Amino acid sequence: MPDLGPMEVLMALLKPEAVLSKIITGAGDWSVRKPRYGDPAFCLMLDGSCVVLPEGLEPIELQRGDFLLFPQMPGFTLAAGVGGDATDSALDMSRFTRHGPESEPETMRMLGGYFRFDPANAAMLVSLLPPVLLVRHDEPGSARLSRVVELVAEEADTDNVCRDVILQRLVEVLLIEAMRVRADLPEHGPQRGLIAGLADPVLAPALAELHADLARGWTVEQLARVAAVSRAVFAQRFTDTLGMPPMRYLLEWRMARAKELLRAERLSATQVADRVGYQSATAFTTAFKRLTGCSPAEFARRGA
Image 1 (spheres, helix red, strand yellow):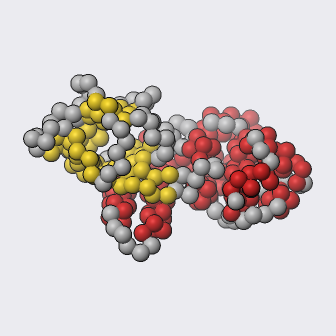
Image 2 (cartoon, helix red, strand yellow):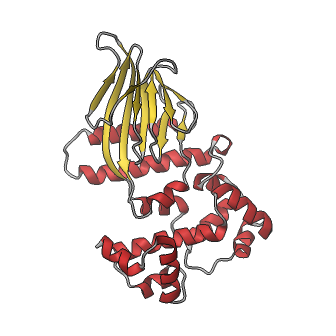
Image 3 (cartoon, rainbow, N blue to C red):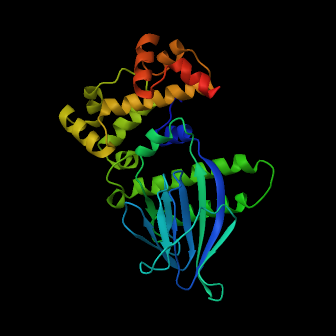
C-alpha cells in the first residue's frame, strides 16, 4: 500500500461490507433494550428525537440531522426519553421497525445501518477508533455526511447490478467522512485513538511518514525528529494520544499489513518480511507468532 495515509490504510485493512440499512420509527412512550451486536452500526436521525443509552457509555440524545456511529456496537437501550422500563428486543434484520403504540402518531424517524469489518484485523483497528463517533447536525461536514448516509440507504434498498460493490464503497466513504469531521474538529473530538492522532499537529506528520513507509527501520528518535519534538515528549504524547507506545503501534500495523499480504497476495514469509520491515523470515515469523498466536504459514492456510 504505497503512498497511502493512515486513513486510507485503515479502510484498506478494515474492508467494511454493508449488511443492512433500515428505517426505525417511534411513537408515544417507548423504550427497547437491544443486545450487544459487536459489529459496527450507525444511524442518522431523520425526524424527531430519541435517547441512546449504550452500555458503559454516557447517554446520547439525538436530534434531527445528528449522525451516530459505533465502530463496535455495544448493548444499548433506545428510548423516547430516559424514563420508563425498557422492553427486551432481539436484533431485527427487517427493513422497517416501529416502536411504541400503533395508535400513536409517529414522532421519531431514523435511518439505521449495520455492517461488518474484515475479522483478520478488526480487533486491533477498532481499538484505534473512539467507541463513539457523534456528528451533530450543526457541525461543519454534517450535511455532506447525511448525503452519504442517504445514498447508502437508497442503494441498500435496491437489487441493482453491482449493488454490493457500490455499497462497500459507500460505507468506506461514510466512515472516512465521519472520521474526517472528527479529525477536523479536534476540540470536540476523541481523547485517544487514530483520529485524535491525526488531529494532533505534532503527531500527524510522524503518522503520515510512518504509514507511507511501514518497512523503514523506524526508531522513536526518527519519528520524534519528523514531529520536531524531543524523543521523550514525542513518546509520551504518542502513548497518551494513540493508547500505545510508538514501537508497539508500528508492530501492530506491520502485522496487520502482513496478514493482508499473506492472505490476499499469497506471498511467502520471506517476501512478506521484506515488505513489512524485517531483515529475515525468521525474525518476521517470530514476531508474527508472538502477536497472533500462529505462524504466517498457518494463518495463510486458514485464509485460503
